[in-house]
Length: 224
Image (cartoon, rainbow, N blue to C red; front, side, top):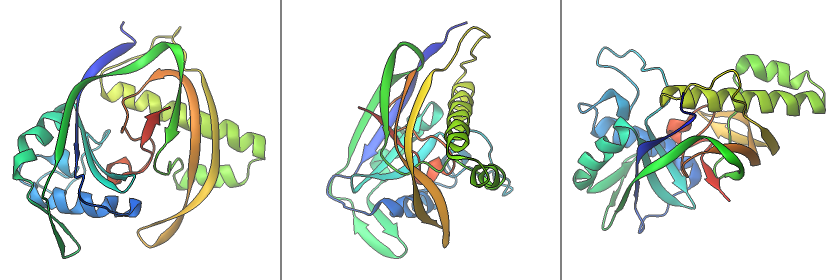
């Protein structure tokens, strides 16, 4: 079975607009509502209000103050179709005209690699859910690092599965993680997240998100 594939990836940026990193959720709210009738992929809800589970195929983020939309697989073609319709951003009633926008469409490699690659979390990685957060807090420092490594590997495997990659019993993800704790505000709650880097024998497209809340911009990676 193949351990690497390519997938369509569309990245839309707005070079004349500057936002804060935490505004990623506002982008998701605006575009999810604006294009609600087009596809549940854009907001991860079906017409009956139920949640679409699985890896978000359209992600909304602010990278280096730049509003950025990332679509992969079916999300890539959706963003390309809707690109010309984007004329303004309405963020909590603050209407910002879109004077220019940029689109990049590519076939991006993803999967296991014969080489090691280093990645940086460009936005905070929200690694833990409520259950494993309790385990994390009760762990030793070495145990915490081992737990975070297991969590990241499981998140990578989940992404691979959603793009149709299944690793065999002899396929192994090697990973070295170097992250530190950061506090972040999410839905008016202080949450634990992480910043830093990891090195692994995997290939990921720049801009892809890992962990929780990737649709709102968390856990965005870049190869360095």
